[in-house]
Amino acid sequence: MKKSILLFLLLAVTQWMAAQGSQVTGVVTAQEDGQPLPGVSIFVQGMANVGTITNVEGKYSIKVPAGKSLTFRCIGYKLQVKPISADAVLNVALEPD
Image (cartoon, rainbow, N blue to C red; front, side):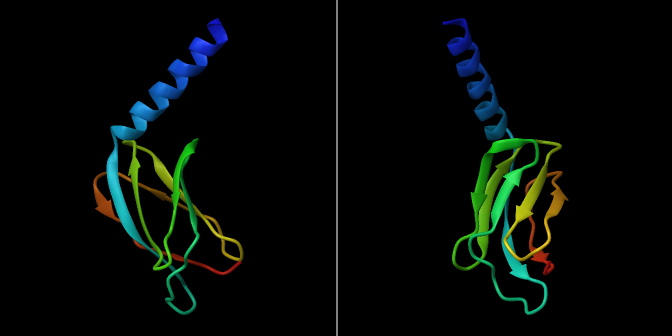
């Protein structure tokens, strides 16, 4: 019972922290040709349960807690980590791997 309550509180705090951050939007493209990349995984670094993916136009939107970074992953491209400091538009060009 105590473990269940502790787990619930941990999840609630994590979700609350995610809701207290900055709204970040942008477009992810391929560095070699500038084409939008659909299906790129974007996660808040250190918070595997807070993330999103790009749509068919390479666009994304995510709330990021203050002082955190975003991790961009896509098969065939190098992983990129970008720090976030405030509400922002963050466009990313992924380099082929």
